Image (tube, rainbow, N blue to C red):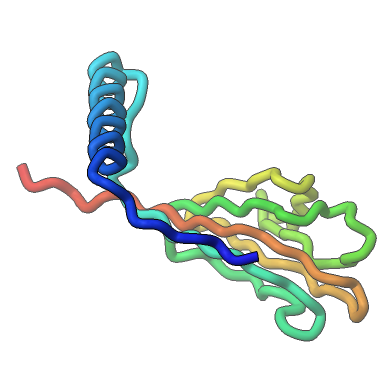
Amino acid sequence: MGMLLTERDDDDEEQDEKEDEKEEEEVAEEEEDGKRREWAGTVDCFLRRYTADTRPFIPFHCDGAAATVNVALTASEDDTAMGGELLCLHSGKVVTERRQEGEATVHPAGLLHGVTRLENGAGERFSMILFFEPPPPRDN
């Protein structure tokens, strides 16, 4: 079934503006209290799909972003996907980061990491990757 789109009237736009103003006021109050700070840098976000045929593994590498968040969208224990696990180099040893669906790994740019090979017929794995870059320095 398709979605019916209708034109918005002026009352809808005024209500949206009022809600936006209220939200901006709440954010300003939180910032004054030191409770909340907005991220002034950039964030790139994308989904990555691993299959034995299309992307069976990722070789060891370091990310170019200042910080990376890697969210597992498929659990490591999922027996339909053997392989496709995140590996990281910690203290000179390769460690498998076993994660449940929805769990995230956060690491700085210098962490050497990769993804193990998915076996044929092993299904697929998904992850969501977010690259964080700090804001440019301010001119004083």
